[in-house]
Length: 536
Image 1: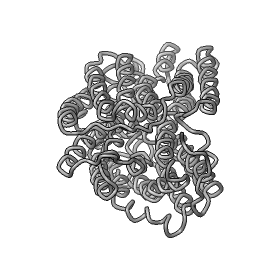
Image 2: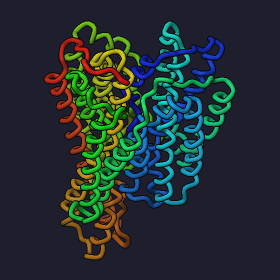
Image 3: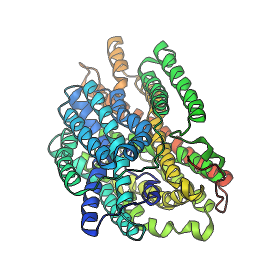
Image 4: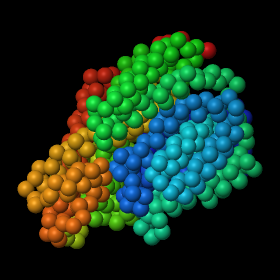
């Protein structure tokens, strides 16, 4: 569910391409089928794994840290390599790289489905992320290259409609598979989809390249991966070993140094994967600052929400997958109307109002307690209002963010602007899970200590409980406790998770407000074209 909201500039990527040799209408249908199914593989996998994580924790004996890595290993390689994946398609052939991505993604999915341990699942998810970095930008580039400007609008509309359907059905389907079959089917479902995509792509989709494509930037890709990986590794591992552990300190230092090196490399490379001169545009800088803050909040909130619903509130996996559907439905129906707000009021107002409403939604998530699911229909009075208010805020800000990001640069740079903004949204979600995970572990640990302080536990039982803190809401009481004491410990665990969840949501609300303020101070009221040298 961390990736349940479609990235802000996907449609910008689609509109920015050029079709040198557009396909015929009969071929165009197959192009859409292949690319919609292909991008759906990556989207469904990124959005439904969270619903499966509680079952994975239980069946594989995974800790909460392992659960973070199962999501983060995929997100890390996808975020760091997605710009490179798009460039590879331009150079070597979009159909070829897209097909290779589908194959790699499918093979990694098989590995995920058969993984006997959390460690193998984490590595397999990392391989999936590499496949996704080839598959996702490839699907968008193929659509751009296959349709003329006159037909592209209809093609984008079809793609967006099916993406909306995937947004609604993906988490619900994932929850149903977990509940009725096994969490492994969340990954196995990719196999028939991949087979269909490959069959259509290799027989119906024409090959295309960009003869004027920018050069590859391998150093940028290596430094970005090392930098993000170092930070994420250090933050996640600090939850179990502490911030003062030498491994954590070294990892954070290496990550920070690599990111500094990435900036210097992008300044010196002839054609960098992330051209820093784009940030001369105040609106582009504002749009990406806004994206980093808002998608950080969104990614972190939607990572921890399913654990609360399943492990604390007692929701089934299907119900947890469906919990956020009202927000997606609101976005699907309202975005076509709210997207016109920029034309009427300018870009600043929607990006100030939207996240302010979203902040209220995040705040409402702090209200349900550990017994929110007691009684029939309680979802409608506890989590439903928060989901609706958050969905309303997202309906206002997401379509207008795309407009601002694209209009902040000259037309020749719109493709680059879209790709960079897309990467910012993915990096934000990647960092959010690691950073907010530290907050969650800290609050959970302190809260649990205070709640069990007066219980009749032996030193050994307290030591066992201390070891199990790493499981967060899935932690179980020590053995050999009386029924009453065990129930009190279980209650303390649930209440401690809710305490951590509330702090996470408060931080997310604050970040949403910060994104609103960033729009107020950084986004200009009218389009200001970027003045910069052309891309050679």
